[in-house]
Image (cartoon, rainbow, N blue to C red):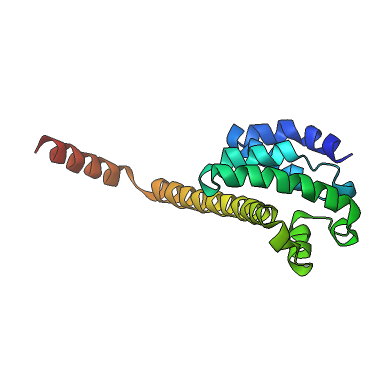
Length: 160
């Protein structure tokens, strides 16, 4: 059901976000704990780490993380606490509450990075949108006389 929803929203999201952000969304979906970790895919999470957090993990730690992901996948189906998490943020909280964040330190770290990156991306996009709105309003308020004076000053500066 969830994958059907994602694929139905995909065309709309493709027109709004670039390919890199779309890859981030798709791979982040692999961390979703709903439906008994049905979407949890070790390969997708590993690819997420390699594509977006290449400098954050050394080669030896990447291999260790892959093993840790496989162990987490087994533990997630057996642990009642982990099965109670229905969002990625709640999963992060459960890992800390049950002290499994020390056992699955890489998973805790990648969840924190994903949650932080998604928020920082949205905040940055909003900041640039606000700057664009201010710039557009300023340009609309400028009179032709000001623009022509500015252009003359710019041309004189280039000639000098």
